[in-house]
Image 1 (cartoon, rainbow, N blue to C red):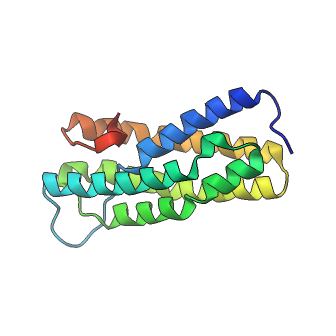
Image 2 (image 1 turned 60 degrees about the horizontal axis):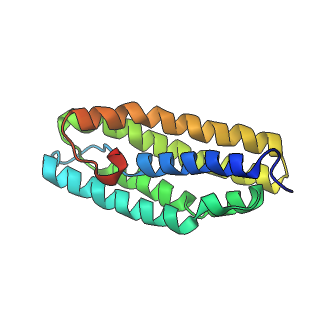
Length: 164
């Protein structure tokens, strides 16, 4: 099955989605239990997670996908990394003023992993309409994380390369 419409146009859209996944990936978390991390420790943890997720996403090279199956397989290769990132972020004890934003981002990461599963199912079923719907949902989830990322930056947190 080939991409409907312009392959170049679809790849451009996927590149934007890929950049947004990378941006959302390194920014989250908020668990409960022990004392909150210091600002510098929190930033260090977030930056480390961002680097891990960025490396996984870049290795998947989704922007070079030739069709929906290839895209779904490449994106699927980072699904477990995103789910682990969501769990890791959930386990963090962010500073009090970063807790709500961090939890928002962790929740978005959990939803991203689920949407990637939906994309894989649609591609496996040759359901191009479902695939397109799920890719749009992926983009919507990524947008849902942006206010939290912006708020963290406004509060003075250095979220590394994902803050750009």
